Length: 125
Image (tube, rainbow, N blue to C red; front, side, top):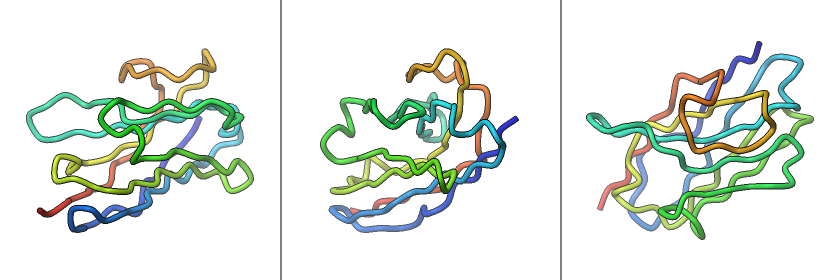
């Protein structure tokens, strides 16, 4: 069992930066693949970035590649999403999610077992 809590969201102007954190509890956290997703009201939840349990492999969606960076600190049971050069279209609720098996990053919502409650990110123009 893994419990996830996101933090770090807020209001920022376009071009600004935020760092989201996903704090996890559960003794198997270090063996979980972690993904960040986001959702806008009325739209489907979409994949943003993911990282394998070792941190050796990361993946980002085309819309955020080069602006967002995912990283993890297994000693702190935390995964981070550094978001730079934010745009108004990045406005959404951001969720972190965990999957234990297989140990591969997936962009598919249904392939993650555990989810946090989400944190709101609002980018003003």
